[in-house]
Amino acid sequence: MSVKIRLKRFGTKKRPFYRIVVQDAREPRDGKTIDELGVYHPISAEDKQIEFNEDRMRHWIGVGAQPTDTVRKILNKKNFTL
Image 1: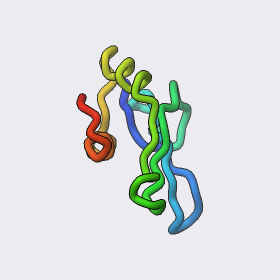
Image 2: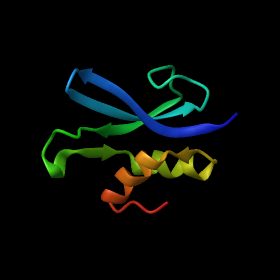
Image 3: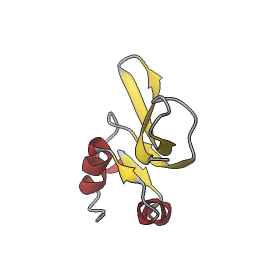
Image 4: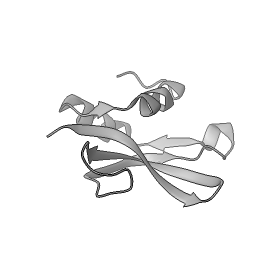
């Protein structure tokens, strides 16, 4: 089973916000999740856009979950090292 750390979209048209989640790679974008790690609000102020649980993120990366390119960029904004 391939596990990915990716974004799950919520919000309305033109007002999105996302949850950073752990999902099986075969699930659809808004499908069933294994764990929720944080949130990403692209419309909010710069300092309030990204919030996530660093301990859970390290755990999932440690057991082999692969972040998508978008999630990797978001984590780099917060200076989180993989």
